[in-house]
Amino acid sequence: MGTVTSQTSAKRFAPDRIAILGGGPGGYEAAMVAADAGAEVTIVEEKGMGGSAVLTDVVPSKTLIATADAMRRVNASTAFGVRFGEHSSDKYETEAWADFSKVNQRLMKLAHSQSRDIHASVEAAGVRIIAGHGRLVAPTNIEVTTEAGETTVLEADAVIIATGAHPRELGSAKPDGERILNWTQAYNLTEVPEHMIVVGSGVTGAEFASAYRRLGADVTLVSSRDQVLPGEDSDAASVLENSFARAGVKVASRSRAESVERTENGVKVTLTDGRVLDGSHCLMAVGGIPNTENIGLEEAGVETTESGHIRVDTVSRTTAAGVYAAGDCTGMMPLASVAAMQGRIAVAHMQGEAVKPLQLHRVASNVFTSPEIATVGVTQAQVDSGKYQTDVVKLDLATNPRAKMMNIREGFVKIFSRKGSGTVIGAVVVAPRASELIFPLALAVTHKLHVDDVAGTFTVYPSLSGSLSEAARRLHLHVAEPNQS
Image (cartoon, rainbow, N blue to C red; front, side, top):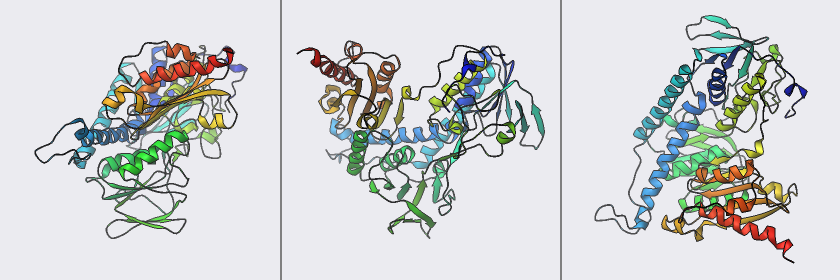
């Protein structure tokens, strides 16, 4: 896995007909590229274009988070001198509240609108879309069963599998869509939960915990580790934990949920250490399972891993000739941006074009908590393990003039440069809209820029991005010091 064989440089037959199983980011991005290249492209999608990323995951969850962030800014606005009526004071929290039925109506409307927009764009590019359940038929055909039960075989020269994933469930905590929820069911609620217990402190759990607390719910986050976001930068996780503490999010650490039961008016969550948590609702955020069962993989010679993910290399090839895969079903980083890149790489490879294999260390990712946490490239854990020799600068945002104007009291910029050369090889940004601020540092990592390239680029004054160049200037001093003796 991850090794590209000599087949990459060998001359291949460019497929005229490409069938894509799944209409999420990996599927529809591949379809657009393939259609633009002149191929006859068909997508088979069961639930709607955009897949779960658009309909039940990324778009609705980030819309919910945007609403929570709007409430945070309103609630904090009294610190700017903003007043709401004669009784308003300097107290940090004002009286904003969320009309949850309207919130969820809006986010689902946006999700379906985005799905329709993708459908229209893909069709306009000349791609045929078939609504139905698809199953791979060796060597490169897809058997499609429509909602009406009609079955047809779609013949193709190459196939891309982009079937995504679905929420993992625990046998002792079955979601019912009312009190016990997975992340696709969170939008069924018509009122802000009185007390939401979130099981799982990874990215999904942390994001929902942050959002629900900002929306006014009491929140308890169940974490099996000492710290939330165990896979993220430890300094960033510490900032988030401090933010959670100030906002009133309770963290039940070092334990797992053994069972979740409905009670007369809510839920009871029993932890493995014997603690029992009572709440009004429980959200299970314990990972995902790839949608790879019963789609003909074994019969077609497509190997899967022990976790059920499709085994692919860095150009999206599976173990079956002419069959590629992209997105969450492959076990690469579960991000829409990675799925889309895998899909585009698959098309370029099957058509014999020059291909840059997928390089996960260049992927910029973001945790949409409050504050946001964005990362790219080398991590602090890799540096601490001795894998990379680096110079590191961590610059708190508290000294940034724009941050002061915006009443931002927490967050930082951290940049890693390769020791000796000064090349930018990693970065972490913790701030509001960190997802936007990470882009120039992702450019630096991707194009192997020197810290001086970042330091010498003009930034607006005042701006949060000024801290990016300031951190790079401080790294220049680290790089220069050995030569000053």
